[in-house]
Image (cartoon, rainbow, N blue to C red):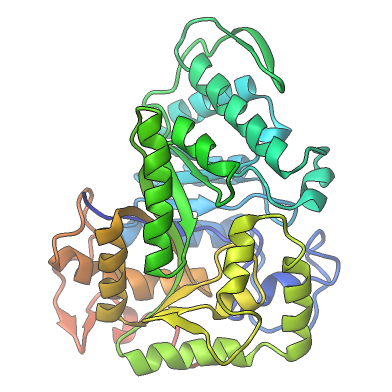
Length: 401
């Protein structure tokens, strides 16, 4: 089992701090009025194209796009980016409750033909009722997962190329059909830590995603989903969602983490923790429990830092350390059964280079990578940095602004 490395497209904005998404005074809807936060980058197509091209050059297999009120639409954005990339795949996040499953199956088929097979699907059931209601979805938490279960059954049914009937609580389909099924069928990624989510993953998905919890918690979660899948006569693969801060030395990496932490004033942290505490997502509550809103115990496992989760929802932990240390932690998760690593960092362009030029060669040397090699592999290094880096260093200087 090889490691699959994926990066992230910040379609809600990017920047040199952890609070860039909060910099828009109007909530991110208009991008011409921002508070005095330096280094905020709007998610325009030119900037997202830079990240996508960098990810492809550095050997990442795919990039994840988020979904929600404060993000650009993932389907439209990534379709545009297929035109400026060649091999890069796009892990498109979407919410099943706000789109017809037959239409979603048809969109996926069209996407595969337009992109020549570069679509992956990330099904996001949704853990925030307020957010769901913005899109006209008024189901409670458990019923949303029950609907996702039916949604995925319909999608797979209409991908068969034959008329498909389905009669469930949430969907009634007669003769559902994708006349030209996608080729290949997109892999379906899915995450959820609640009791309602587990059976949905076991019955329907290809890759179960977890946020970056400590290894022992991840081991338990893998065992839980694997056991449920075995009862369904299926096998599920596993992935993890993490941030990374990788540098030439551990000292430099932790200095960068400290600088990110130093940007967070107490009022910002308190407001974020209050908002995140209202989430119905069990996964989000598990993220919050890792640090309890406190600053003094953020290294919750070796090289695993929970500082991101002080102000940001979703993935709240980062792998922090030297390139070899970060590779060690990836190898540790891989030994538990994690195959897909969906990574990100702030800013995403610079951190892609730090990881791609530093950690990826470490993983390749350990025999953990397969597939299309990075063009940077095999390039002689100077002072631990591949010669391809301009000036011997990537764009971000450790500890700098």
